[in-house]
Length: 115
Image (cartoon, rainbow, N blue to C red; front, side, top):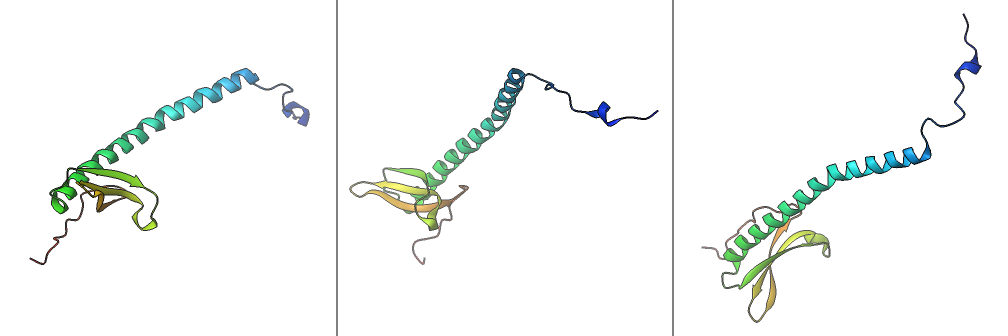
């Protein structure tokens, strides 16, 4: 019993139709998006909440007379890429309070005086 090469040739038509292949691509793409998107959204919401709370703590420590605080993610300055905290001071506008990092956490509260 011997096998000839002609028995192992590729079939002349594809296994699935082009409509079915396109439908499978769409379904797989939607499934991957459905797996990844919730994780990205939960991570972003957690970072926003953490940055907001950390900014409130830093503002209460460094600028106790401020009307409010604001945490924002910034790309502008290479030294301060990440979450930055600003206090809303009456008559001065926004005042930089603390750098919270790319992944926000509790700010380092260093005393302003030597006492």
